[in-house]
Length: 155
Image 1 (cartoon, rainbow, N blue to C red):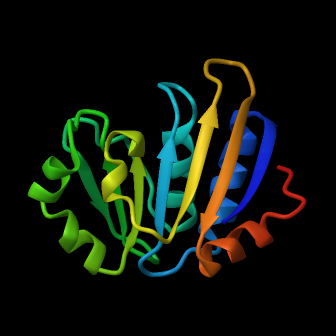
Image 2 (spheres, rainbow, N blue to C red):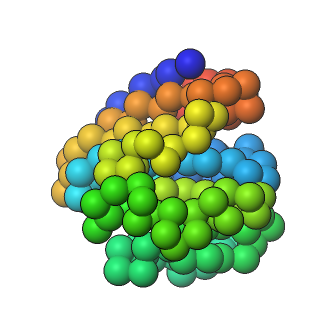
């Protein structure tokens, strides 16, 4: 596992980070987002979606998952309202994993047993108008390459 921590991230910097990550995504990529309400999870996902040619991404809190077509398909999950991974699998999570799109899942702390062994974790802290901190943890060589591409990141 490789990690980097980015500090003092403003909203424009979060957007730039999302775009930079998107430039290195691949079919089957899994992005696991962690953080409190208002930490910037959806902001990051919106930015990476925009880079994939997908406009108008909103959090799928009530629908659990939204599918988007872009240069890579994006499956945006929100596990906020889930009590267990069983609920996630009941809506066909295995099928989404097998489809080869990018999965960006918010609130992964609610379904830790569903997270693939190889993934990029994004742990966000902060909220409101204050700058954010983002700890990125790469599990697997393809995700470590994404962190290598973020070396020296600044918006």
